Length: 272
Ligand SMILES: [Zn+2]
Figure 1 (cartoon, rainbow, N blue to C red):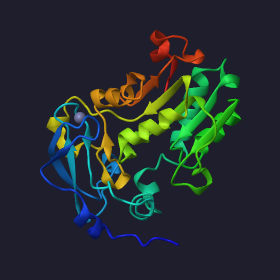
Figure 2 (cartoon, rainbow, N blue to C red; figure 1 turned 60 degrees about the horizontal axis):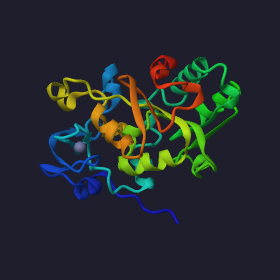
Figure 3 (cartoon, rainbow, N blue to C red; figure 1 turned 135 degrees about the horizontal axis):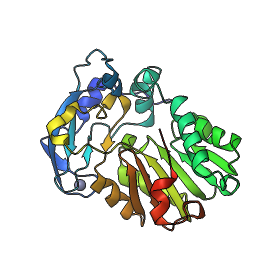
Figure 4 (cartoon, rainbow, N blue to C red; figure 1 turned 90 degrees about the vertical axis):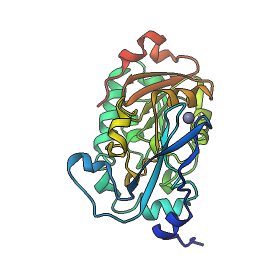
């Protein structure tokens, strides 16, 4: 039976919206950072503004680790996410989702490890339409699977573990970052790595405030990491983390064969 979804107004009324809360990454105090309209999207970066909803979404920033997040979505059901965020209007606020991003990342991964493709077993975690895994498979990767809770085709967790888990523009969507990363790392072989794309906060985030383009509730951008919070959360799962660009990171427990050694990690990916 389909569950009736609550309206945005009801969800806003029930959301946590005080002056402070506890950090979802390190449990320290996180004061209110600011409030933005629910309709604020990443496309404002490209000059496209949606009409206001009048519903304000509070974001908090941890004093200790710098994690920037909202609790507005904490009690939403999957159906409510699909009704209000990942709906038919979503492609307009994330136009690269369907093709541009999977194509660029498939090229980046296959260009980085041309001699190891037949040994790579990849899971695209939060892989949307399954396009990246499909392209990796077509490029000769031994096995490439998708897990995506909002797509019925890929909603079941693929069996076994993987030596490459990609997580492309996904971490910022997690309402519970600790639980999400715990589940992600469970799919990772001991000798394996996670390729992460999520944009870290700029160093002048306090100055920019909630005007930062990546802070966008309409895109479902709920969890915005600092270098410290991202490292903390992977460390908690026994992983090392290396940031190679502000939006590209590797995490691993034991360096896999295709990354050779830690010093070379940074050189071996040329993403978009
Ligand atoms: Zn924190």
